[in-house]
Every structure is written in structure tokens, then in C-alpha cells.
Image: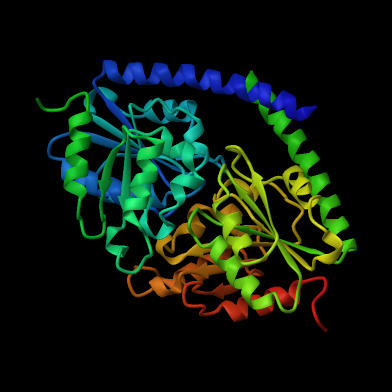
Length: 222
Length: 222
């Protein structure tokens, strides 16, 4: 049956992907470049958080952004507008970034000169959790309007990350969102994940996030 | 190379899926049962729109709901709480519902007695666009906080639907969302799609949506 064959080939692909991801991670580490993979649903604020991070860290670290999108350059244009090198991966309908796509995009960057490369993954709370991109740091954003029950419904992505960012805290007044319940779910799934609450619109909480990120880089100041 | 094999097997699977979807669609039509597939990002309001639809149409039509989730029954519990039959598909990490999953869930329902079966797909704006579930009517929801540029970034799902529902209009006061631009994008991608603006929180616009849906059913009143 085709399904059984598919599962076998999928395992083969995942194992090839993992090997390439490990190689990418090591090559980047050797160059003291840190790769940050940012994942979330569409519209949770990946691009906004990246723009805030650029604003707060650009004086201290050299950065570039890899933007993945099904077939537009909307986000890459915004990053380039901020004066930061942006590389576009058009996945052509593919639902997440894998290590091979990342490698191809990273090859166009002068990695030796970069402290931080930020990957904005495809907006999707399911598939990006399943493929190692080679990143050193994996982060998921959830935004207040999406609802506090999302960790229960999409547990895999929340389990595998180094940090969880709760964005759009400026919506707390209009949304029925229980922060205590949300963080309780997160702690039960992933007790080690760093936790941040931010509003990229007002800037609230973004300094704490960027300070943490800075401390995680290979080139972190002593 | 594994990748080439994967593409071939994927095509095989898609073609098998399409055949099964066509069969499901025909079987349901023969029973005068309509299958509605609702897709969106996580947290855009699929469950809320379904609950509103139940409230508005339950006196006129007999309904059941098929809930797909990675591994929770949060939504199915809400539907069952409204006194409507809810069947759960736990996709176990799989990112969308395919025809085989739908058939298995539908087999547990007394289809002959049902006017409308609503499928709540996995929260994902990418993958559900790629697999025919057998539905007669496909609908995508976008919510105001996700941003007006989403049709540009996830065009495939917007292209293939019969209706687009813009939800959470009660957020218009706090969100920077350009409705004219959004509907212009939609019309350029899919000029035939029916268009609705609703707030499932306040109920605004939901009667117009449910009246349209009622008119699309095999068992629509003359």
C-alpha cells in the first residue's frame, strides 16, 4: 500500500534532514553564528518580533533574516526596509522550512560576519515542529487573540522549543484570555522553556526578550 | 534519491485521496447530506462559528460535527456541550484531514438522518488546502487580529474555497486592519467566493452567514 511506503520514505527523509541539520548547526557554531528559528500561526507576530529584535540588538550584534513564505515577499520587504539583509525562501506551497532549504538560503549569506541569523518559518503551528532546521534556538509565539487553549491543541510545537513568547498583550483588555491557565499549560508541556510576554505594537516586554536572546548567542558579551 | 521517490508516492496518495473524496461526496449527495469543511489558522474562530451556526440552524436542519485535532478533545467537548453529536478525529500530529479520515469518522454517523455535517479541520492555513476531504462546501475563516495581508501570504487556501468569512469584527477598533484591502486581495484571488464579515462574540453578521449556508444545502427549503 502506498501509505506504508510513504511512512518508510518519510522516515528516510526525516533522518536525512536531521543529519543535515546537525551539520548546519555545527558549521554555524564554528563560525560563532547563532541560528534562531521563530515559529507561530499566521499573524501571531513573527515579523513584528523580528523587527523589534533588530531595533533593540542591531547596535550590538550583526544580523540577517531568512524569510520563508509560500509565495510572497511581503515580510522580506519589511525586513529589508529596516536596512537588514533579508533572504527569501519561497517554499512553493510547502508547509515548513527543512534543513536543505535553510542551507541553500544560508549559503547566500556571509556567515563569518554574522552574530545572529533569524529564520522566520512558514506561519503554521503544526508542521514546522516536525523538521529540524539546524537552529540553535527554537522559539514559538502565541498571540492573545488565538486563545489560551492552544498549547493543549498543538502540544508538539510547544514541547520542543527553548522559549515561548506570548504576543499582543495590548489585546488583553478585549480578549477572553486566561494568562495563568496558558502558562500552566506551557509549564506542564515544557517546564524548561523561557517565558516572555510582549506587545510588539507598544514595545512592552520586548527588552526582556531581546536581553535573553542576546545572552544565548555564541557571541554573547561576557 | 528519496526526495524523488517521495514526490512520486505523494502524487499516488493525492490521486487515491481525490478518488475517495469524490466517492464520499457522491454518497453524501445521494443521502441529501451536505458536508461543510471549515478551515483556518489556530484560534481564528472555527469552533465559535460552528457553535453560532448550530444555534441559528438547529431548528431547521439536523446536524453533526466532525472535529479534527492533533490530540485533544477540547472542541468536540464544546460541541457536545451544545447538545449536538460530535465525532472526534485525532490526527496524531498529522496536519490536515484527508478523505480516508473523513470516511472513517462519517461511518460512525447516521448520515441518512442528517442534513448537514460540519468538519472542523486542523488549525492550519497551509496543508488543509492540499487535500480534498469530500466536502461539498469549503470555507476559510480569517480573523481580524491575523492581519489583512494573509491572502497574499497563504493564497492557495483562499483560492480554493466557496466562501471567505472575516471573523472578530469586534477587534476592528483595536487592530490595524484594512478591510477594503483585504477584500480586494480576496476578489483578485477568488472572485466567486461568497464574502461574510462576522463577530462570533457579539453575533454580528452571523445570520447572513447562516442564511447563505442554509441556501447551499441539498435539503435547502424552497
